[in-house]
Image (tube, rainbow, N blue to C red; front, top):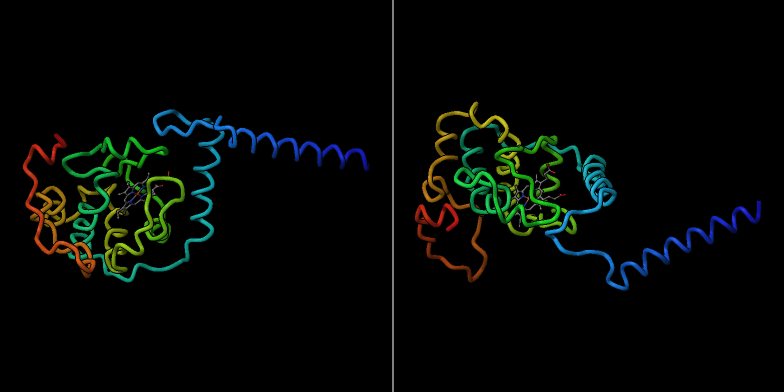
Length: 202
Ligand code: HEC
């Protein structure tokens, strides 16, 4: 029994030493444009889902499900999220694909987690990925607006014509201010609407 436990301890130490050496000597491939090991992917995806499932508080969306909420969410989404997760004129974001893990492309593959989990992820971000924590960037009400909207991206064609128009229309037309207050010292001048070339990403 003593030998058995000793063997386990030595085994665990050897494994920990091996992992340490692997990282310490720069053997672990950190390039974003290389595929990940299957083990790595399985572990991390699962860990993220399980973490959100376990920790996201069972909060209810405080906003009513109205066109105004959804259109507000679209404005927040277009200014802050579409660059990575895709928008109406760029259903697949090349920038988002450059992250590892890649940013999920919501136009084609809408988030299907419960709303409280989307809210939690948007608020806190996802460690060691490109997904930022938005709690210090967006007003609480804007986080809820965009949470409401992304949860309905899978059924865009069922939303009201006004909402669909806001989604398809140009960013400048759709956008009431995305955040409650501008950061101190931020530019007050509105950005000019992008030309069609710019919007297509050329
Ligand atoms: C700089 C790029 C970037 C921006 C900007 C960004 N995200 Fe993300 N987001 C990511 C990446 C990368 C992931 C994948 C993280 C992972 O694999 O766990 C992600 C994951 C998510 C998820 C979890 C999706 C799922 O099904 O697992 C949600 C929800 C989300 N983002 C919402 C948003 C919202 C809303 C915004 C805007 C307020 C936003 N993101 C802005 C890069 C970004």
